[in-house]
Image: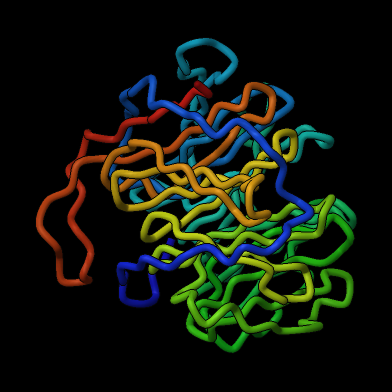
Length: 341
């Protein structure tokens, strides 16, 4: 995803506050497999089809789909999007049998979850980054850093039905399941709450001062918690009103954060060689962070709630380019699999 601020190191300590949503889950994880990923260039968010136990790997030109139910993830097919353009997000809508993508092409690719065949490629009118599906309305909210907006898309009419000005570029979001969508606004240091039905922002809350650039986001809808991954290596744990309950140290640039609702475990990727696994510390009531050996650049993350497995992806990098980011080497994409140990 778009990285909007300097990527600073941090050694902040946990705040020992009680968190109702985190349980004493399995914290031991091991990197068990490295699987080469074919196709063009760069990568971004990982997605997961829980009903079919399939992992979505976004990349330039499309989405690779892996069967994650076996010991070794196996490529079962691909969904083509726009040639030469990075696909940023891929989301499964299990109860309706389709998935959809988001990316800089200004379109979304809707595809059948079983066959992976493309159903339609409607226009969104702007390049987008992350996307969020709201199950209560059946609409998607696409986040556009190109023009600082959130675009509301109706899958029945297959048309854009609303555009919400955000003031600054959005980064990622999560759905509350009740018509509210929460959006990270890192350049403002805020989380905006969007009412999808009225297509407007209903509140904005500041992130904790220790959080520099809130990037990744995951949600625990049962216990009403948000998990915000910050570029400087902080996990800001808040309630849905935006009040910080605790912070925890994680790896730098946690571009994507995932939550396992079965074990109540939070996973944060990072650009460093660490995967952060966050659970409740039974001694203090605060978050307990376990650092799992990973690989450089593995900043996005997905979790299979059926098996407890976690996945992220990376590639080899060269010198830092004019945009301040290291240049990826083509043909080096690889999927990393972590098993509970």
